[in-house]
Image (cartoon, rainbow, N blue to C red):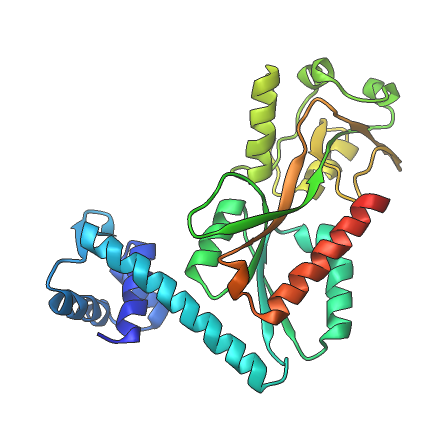
Length: 301
């Protein structure tokens, strides 16, 4: 049993496919299968169950998967931290996040972090939802994920940095623009531009609408918050979006007006990691820099 065997086994379990892992590793499916079979011989039990659409771990396989994934993650983190130590902070910080997160929450922090750590490589991987961010944290060698904080996720620790209130984006010439705020009746009558499909922010908002008994009458959906606001500016509907500090703040913003929506619970956003106590010093420094900037912006935005 080798470390590479365990890495391949973990990859197969997560992908649910021998052929997919073979493509990723640029080898044959037979080579991947042989590694799994070697583990099965050494453990004395089947580890994978073949199904028409792929493979899943057997009960014994799930035991090995949990232990191997945790062990490999810990080893990879240790090797990276040793590398940073040897290179005197010339390491890297890998972040997974939504498409507009860097612009909304991290721009100033990236500049500040770069000034303090000019030799560190910052890498960003885009994900379309918090669930995809969690999967990326679990499946790849990533340090941090910026997510909508929600229910506990096994193997992931979450920390709220900011709680964002909601605002309704309407054109300045819209009758609603004269109101000091938007209430449930206003939301029920609005033509909604929906947030990204399967995103955590949309799920949070849809749940709040359901609690208030507000029907959703539009299927218009967008790829990100900025596009929702742009379509509202073009007069294609109304967009309920989080009040991003310094960007979508209550009041008039050119042709748009952002109305507070106090009936909706705020959207908690922040960091997710595998384990805070195993973060490299550089990753922790970047997370703290973003959190500090976010707190400052929230208080002054």
